[in-house]
Image 1 (cartoon, rainbow, N blue to C red):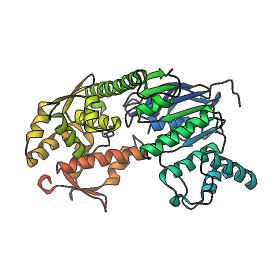
Image 2 (image 1 turned 180 degrees about the vertical axis):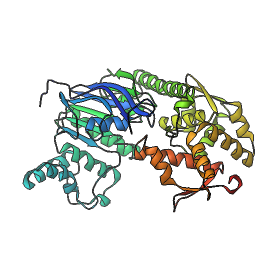
Image 3 (image 1 turned 135 degrees about the horizontal axis):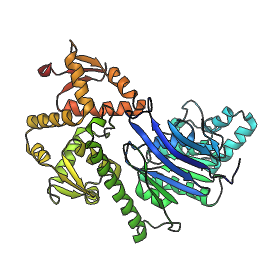
Image 4 (image 1 turned 90 degrees about the vertical axis):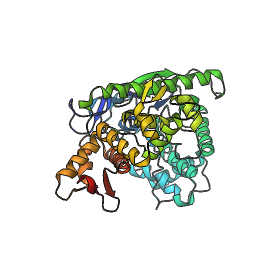
Length: 435
C-alpha cells in the first residue's frame, strides 16, 4: 500500500439512482474531496443531502454514477482492504457472540481461526469490552453494542475509518464517553488508522473532534464549504473561538437550505414526484407554526433563537423549516424565518378549515401527492397499493429514500383527508367525498 498517496481522493463524483441524464434527480453532484493522512474529516449537511451516500461511495459499498474515486491511487470499485466502516444502527448479528461478531470480518478475509480470535480479543480489549467476549448483543447496552461495532471495524487494522453517525443512537453521556475513548485511541496512536471520516448532524461534535469540516449543500449534495479547524486539542466548547466556528457553520447550513429551496422552487418543472420531502410529520409542523406565531417571536424568528427556545436539534429544526417553506407557509431571509399570511390564516382557522387549507397547499406544492390523487381518481375502485408508487420513486432514488418520501407524503395527505392508507394492507384509497 502506497502511504505517499492521499488515502482518499474524489473527483467530480456524481450519484443518481436510475439512468444518469438531465431529467434524473441527483443525490450528489460534482463532489471534489481529498482526505489526507492524519486527518479527521467531518461531513455535515441537512438530512437528505447525501452525506451517508457519500460515505458509502468512499467505502466502496455504493458505486458512483460518474466521476473518480481513488484510494491510495487505486480506483474504488467495491469494498477495499484498508477501509472499514462503523454504522449508526450497530448492525450486529444477534446469533453471534461479541467475539464472533468482531472476528466475522476476518473470517470473511480467510484469516485462520487462531489468528482471528487473537486479533478479535485484542480489539475487544482495546475498545473496553474485555469480559464480554461470550455475551450476545441482546445482553449489551446500546453503548456496548456500538463498541462492538467499533471493535469489528478496528480488528481489520483499517488505514481509513468511516463513521456513519456512530453516536446518534446513544444517549448524550454514553456518546460523550465513547467519542472520548475513540479520540484517545487516535491521539495516542493505539490504532493504525491514518484517516477518519465521519458523518454527523451535531455541529458541536464535529467542531470538537475534527481537523476539517465539509459542509454539503442540499438537493443535490455539493461541497459548499471546506473548513479547517486549527483550535488545539482538547477543545473547550465554552470558548469564544469554539462558539464562533459553531455559529458560522450553523449560519451556512441555514442559509444554504433557504437558498437551495428557493432556487428549486423557481424551477417547479424540475421538481418531480421524487423530490426529497423532509422526514417530518404534520404535528411537529403545526407546533413550529404555533411557536413562531407566539411571543416572543410574533411571526418572525431567528433560527438560533428558535432552536434554543424550543429545545430542538438543529437538523430537526432545519427539516421543519424546510417543510414549512416547501408548503408556502414561511419565507427565509438569511437565518430569519417569517410566517406567510397563508400560515397565519391557517394557524387561526378551526380544525376543518385547517385541514382544507393544508390540503390545498400540499396538492399545490408536493407533486407526489398530486400524482397519487390523480392515479386514485382514475382507477375504477379508487384504490392503489403503495408498491405502485414506491416502484416509481425507486426509479429515481434509493429504496430507503423512496420509503421515507412516500411515508411523509402519506402522513401529510392523511391529515388533510385527501386519501386514506391501510398500514396492514399497504393500500391507498381515495376519500369517498373526492371519488
